Image (cartoon, rainbow, N blue to C red; front, side, top):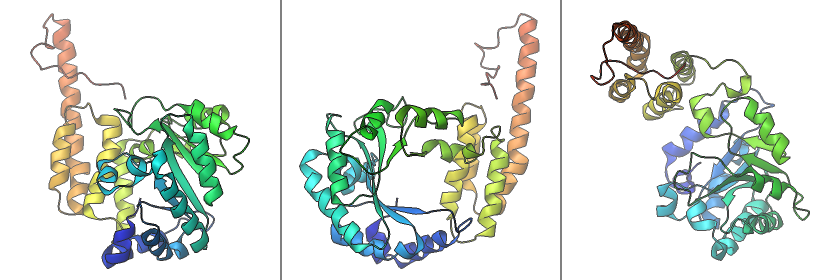
Length: 311
């Protein structure tokens, strides 16, 4: 999700993302850039600065973050029916101005019955496909709980909608990919939050150790210097480890230590030296706790026994 304003006025921001877009695994892999905003002219100007490095440009109509509310874009501002004419104008301007296709990502409208109508109007405005994250923006826990995939199915089955529909939501493990597509009938599948924690999801392998994932990621960051900032790298590594270890007793220490790192070498030392040490201490504490429990000592109340979720 890129900011059109910063692409236009922040040269360092523009150069960083153009540099990022130049690193493709292979030419056959398509890349879609997502823009946010509510000003058609600004979005078009920004899109023209990166369209030569991508295969499509998506308009974000589903972001529920506070920044979207504050800056009047995404689901908080553009999803409501009173703002549909604004959205239609933006999509139309994008479709007429770019040399690559335009797509749109939305959440459920309120009431949800309006979602199909909104999608049809996006199609008429020039959207080449639509991604539906099947939750409403008002969901109290916007990233947890089940998405209503029946709404994706309903959208796909609409006779007046002829463009592809992409499903988004409810994917935690590899098997969920096929289940989602089989149920919804969607033409494609988008995965967000889960990939932040497990970037190996699509490989259908056993979930790798989060430290191994983090070290491999550091190698990639060194291979392509200047693409990700230190803050971005720290955030990604926190996601990798949080995905599997958020309830581990050492996770809070890791977050503090990770934030204190000043370069990649610091992060690597943390992962190779400190984290294994913390893990080993935790395992020893658990083993000692098990022995004491057999001796009739209740350590749960004393706070000595660590309760570890299964690996």
